[in-house]
Length: 187
Image 1 (spheres, rainbow, N blue to C red):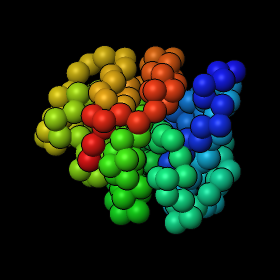
Image 2 (image 1 turned 135 degrees about the horizontal axis):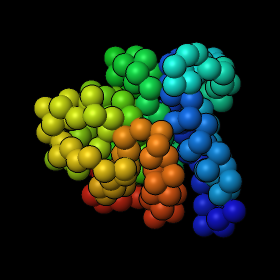
Image 3 (image 1 turned 30 degrees about the vertical axis):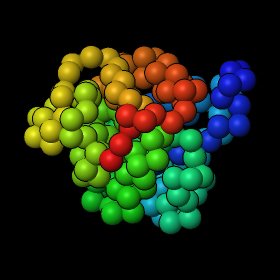
Protein backbone atom coordinates (compact mmCIF):
# COMPACT_ATOMS: atom_id res chain seq x y z
CA UNK A 1 0.00 0.00 0.00
CA UNK A 2 1.23 3.47 -0.93
CA UNK A 3 0.93 5.69 2.17
CA UNK A 4 0.96 8.82 -0.01
CA UNK A 5 -2.29 7.66 -1.63
CA UNK A 6 -4.08 6.58 1.54
CA UNK A 7 -7.16 8.74 2.03
CA UNK A 8 -7.43 9.73 -1.64
CA UNK A 9 -10.78 9.21 -3.34
CA UNK A 10 -11.29 8.46 -7.03
CA UNK A 11 -14.49 8.32 -9.06
CA UNK A 12 -14.87 5.88 -11.91
CA UNK A 13 -17.67 7.16 -14.15
CA UNK A 14 -19.30 4.46 -16.25
CA UNK A 15 -22.55 3.05 -17.57
CA UNK A 16 -23.62 -0.18 -19.28
CA UNK A 17 -21.21 -1.47 -21.89
CA UNK A 18 -17.90 -0.40 -20.33
CA UNK A 19 -14.95 -2.64 -21.15
CA UNK A 20 -14.75 -4.82 -18.03
CA UNK A 21 -10.98 -4.84 -17.59
CA UNK A 22 -10.82 -1.06 -18.04
CA UNK A 23 -12.87 -0.63 -14.86
CA UNK A 24 -11.87 -3.66 -12.80
CA UNK A 25 -8.10 -3.47 -13.28
CA UNK A 26 -7.65 0.26 -12.48
CA UNK A 27 -10.06 -0.07 -9.54
CA UNK A 28 -8.01 -2.97 -8.12
CA UNK A 29 -4.72 -1.07 -8.61
CA UNK A 30 -6.12 2.00 -6.87
CA UNK A 31 -7.57 -0.01 -3.97
CA UNK A 32 -4.31 -1.94 -3.56
CA UNK A 33 -2.61 1.43 -3.02
CA UNK A 34 -5.06 2.58 -0.34
CA UNK A 35 -7.34 4.68 -2.57
CA UNK A 36 -11.07 4.74 -1.92
CA UNK A 37 -12.84 4.13 -5.24
CA UNK A 38 -16.46 4.89 -6.08
CA UNK A 39 -18.18 3.62 -9.20
CA UNK A 40 -20.46 6.49 -10.25
CA UNK A 41 -23.26 5.74 -12.69
CA UNK A 42 -25.91 7.98 -14.25
CA UNK A 43 -28.78 6.24 -12.45
CA UNK A 44 -26.91 4.99 -9.37
CA UNK A 45 -27.78 1.43 -10.36
CA UNK A 46 -25.56 -1.53 -11.18
CA UNK A 47 -24.03 -1.53 -14.64
CA UNK A 48 -23.18 -4.39 -16.96
CA UNK A 49 -19.71 -4.84 -18.41
CA UNK A 50 -18.73 -5.76 -21.92
CA UNK A 51 -16.01 -8.41 -21.65
CA UNK A 52 -14.17 -8.24 -24.99
CA UNK A 53 -16.74 -10.09 -27.10
CA UNK A 54 -19.86 -10.51 -24.97
CA UNK A 55 -21.67 -9.14 -21.95
CA UNK A 56 -19.79 -9.60 -18.70
CA UNK A 57 -20.51 -9.14 -15.01
CA UNK A 58 -22.76 -6.56 -13.42
CA UNK A 59 -20.94 -4.08 -11.19
CA UNK A 60 -22.61 -2.32 -8.29
CA UNK A 61 -22.76 1.45 -8.29
CA UNK A 62 -21.52 3.34 -5.26
CA UNK A 63 -23.29 6.59 -6.13
CA UNK A 64 -25.61 8.15 -8.69
CA UNK A 65 -24.10 10.93 -10.77
CA UNK A 66 -26.66 13.43 -9.45
CA UNK A 67 -25.37 12.94 -5.87
CA UNK A 68 -21.66 13.59 -6.47
CA UNK A 69 -19.46 16.41 -7.63
CA UNK A 70 -15.80 16.91 -8.45
CA UNK A 71 -15.02 18.24 -4.96
CA UNK A 72 -15.80 14.77 -3.54
CA UNK A 73 -12.81 13.24 -5.38
CA UNK A 74 -9.11 13.66 -6.09
CA UNK A 75 -9.27 12.18 -9.62
CA UNK A 76 -11.57 10.73 -12.28
CA UNK A 77 -11.21 7.50 -14.29
CA UNK A 78 -13.15 6.98 -17.51
CA UNK A 79 -13.17 3.37 -18.77
CA UNK A 80 -13.74 2.75 -22.44
CA UNK A 81 -15.59 0.11 -24.31
CA UNK A 82 -17.76 1.13 -27.21
CA UNK A 83 -21.22 1.50 -25.66
CA UNK A 84 -20.25 3.21 -22.38
CA UNK A 85 -18.50 6.34 -23.69
CA UNK A 86 -20.93 6.62 -26.58
CA UNK A 87 -23.78 6.93 -24.05
CA UNK A 88 -21.90 9.16 -21.61
CA UNK A 89 -20.81 11.63 -24.29
CA UNK A 90 -24.48 12.45 -24.81
CA UNK A 91 -25.18 12.90 -21.08
CA UNK A 92 -24.81 16.56 -20.09
CA UNK A 93 -24.38 15.70 -16.39
CA UNK A 94 -21.53 13.31 -17.23
CA UNK A 95 -19.88 15.96 -19.42
CA UNK A 96 -20.19 18.60 -16.68
CA UNK A 97 -18.78 16.18 -14.09
CA UNK A 98 -15.75 15.37 -16.28
CA UNK A 99 -15.16 19.01 -17.18
CA UNK A 100 -15.20 20.01 -13.51
CA UNK A 101 -12.09 17.87 -12.87
CA UNK A 102 -10.25 19.78 -15.59
CA UNK A 103 -11.40 23.12 -14.21
CA UNK A 104 -10.12 22.08 -10.75
CA UNK A 105 -6.76 20.90 -12.14
CA UNK A 106 -7.34 17.32 -10.96
CA UNK A 107 -6.07 14.19 -12.71
CA UNK A 108 -8.32 12.52 -15.27
CA UNK A 109 -7.52 9.12 -16.81
CA UNK A 110 -9.31 7.90 -19.96
CA UNK A 111 -8.70 4.73 -21.93
CA UNK A 112 -9.85 3.24 -25.24
CA UNK A 113 -13.01 5.03 -26.51
CA UNK A 114 -13.38 7.15 -23.33
CA UNK A 115 -11.77 10.23 -24.93
CA UNK A 116 -15.10 10.62 -26.76
CA UNK A 117 -16.46 11.88 -23.44
CA UNK A 118 -13.64 14.41 -23.18
CA UNK A 119 -14.17 15.58 -26.76
CA UNK A 120 -17.82 16.34 -26.02
CA UNK A 121 -16.84 17.98 -22.72
CA UNK A 122 -14.68 20.37 -24.76
CA UNK A 123 -11.41 19.70 -22.92
CA UNK A 124 -9.07 18.11 -25.50
CA UNK A 125 -7.99 21.04 -27.68
CA UNK A 126 -4.21 21.43 -27.60
CA UNK A 127 -3.73 18.33 -25.46
CA UNK A 128 -1.34 15.45 -26.29
CA UNK A 129 -3.37 12.22 -26.10
CA UNK A 130 -3.80 8.65 -27.24
CA UNK A 131 -6.81 6.36 -27.59
CA UNK A 132 -7.99 3.32 -29.46
CA UNK A 133 -7.11 3.88 -33.12
CA UNK A 134 -10.73 4.41 -34.21
CA UNK A 135 -10.98 7.54 -32.01
CA UNK A 136 -7.73 9.09 -33.30
CA UNK A 137 -9.34 11.18 -36.03
CA UNK A 138 -12.08 12.35 -33.67
CA UNK A 139 -9.40 13.63 -31.29
CA UNK A 140 -7.49 15.32 -34.12
CA UNK A 141 -10.70 16.96 -35.34
CA UNK A 142 -11.28 18.28 -31.81
CA UNK A 143 -7.79 19.84 -31.75
CA UNK A 144 -5.85 17.22 -29.79
CA UNK A 145 -2.38 16.01 -30.76
CA UNK A 146 -2.99 12.24 -31.08
CA UNK A 147 -0.02 9.86 -30.75
CA UNK A 148 0.16 6.07 -30.89
CA UNK A 149 1.74 5.23 -27.52
CA UNK A 150 0.74 2.89 -24.68
CA UNK A 151 0.21 5.79 -22.29
CA UNK A 152 0.39 9.56 -22.65
CA UNK A 153 0.45 12.07 -19.80
CA UNK A 154 -0.27 15.75 -20.40
CA UNK A 155 -0.49 17.85 -17.23
CA UNK A 156 -2.63 15.43 -15.25
CA UNK A 157 -4.47 13.95 -18.23
CA UNK A 158 -3.62 10.25 -18.62
CA UNK A 159 -4.73 8.41 -21.76
CA UNK A 160 -4.13 4.89 -23.09
CA UNK A 161 -5.21 2.86 -26.10
CA UNK A 162 -6.58 -0.54 -25.07
CA UNK A 163 -6.63 -3.10 -22.24
CA UNK A 164 -3.15 -4.29 -23.26
CA UNK A 165 -1.89 -0.91 -21.99
CA UNK A 166 -3.46 -1.18 -18.53
CA UNK A 167 -0.17 -1.70 -16.66
CA UNK A 168 1.24 1.54 -18.08
CA UNK A 169 -2.12 3.30 -17.63
CA UNK A 170 -2.37 2.30 -13.97
CA UNK A 171 1.23 3.29 -13.20
CA UNK A 172 0.71 6.79 -14.61
CA UNK A 173 -2.74 7.12 -12.99
CA UNK A 174 -1.20 6.39 -9.59
CA UNK A 175 1.69 8.77 -10.26
CA UNK A 176 -0.60 11.63 -11.30
CA UNK A 177 -2.91 10.99 -8.34
CA UNK A 178 0.06 11.17 -5.98
CA UNK A 179 1.20 14.45 -7.56
CA UNK A 180 -2.28 15.96 -7.06
CA UNK A 181 -3.48 19.10 -8.78
CA UNK A 182 -1.83 20.17 -12.03
CA UNK A 183 -1.75 23.80 -13.08
CA UNK A 184 -1.61 22.68 -16.74
CA UNK A 185 -4.85 20.71 -16.39
CA UNK A 186 -7.52 23.02 -17.72
CA UNK A 187 -10.89 23.09 -19.39
